[in-house]
Length: 78
Image (cartoon, rainbow, N blue to C red; front, side, top):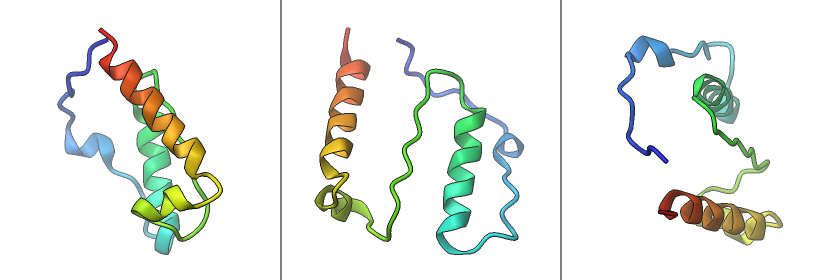
């Protein structure tokens, strides 16, 4: 698996978010970047106001931890 970061022109990542407010802006930017990323990709949007470590204490915390574990296993599988 090639994990090198590809250089991108900053204009490739421009996202129109002027009409969005608050967290919507960040979610829409993330969705746009996800759509433009090469496969394989995965996007999980966790609803709510929790952030950082607080996410692990929500009802999706176990799912989040499993996803991170799987990502690490996949990325480090040699």
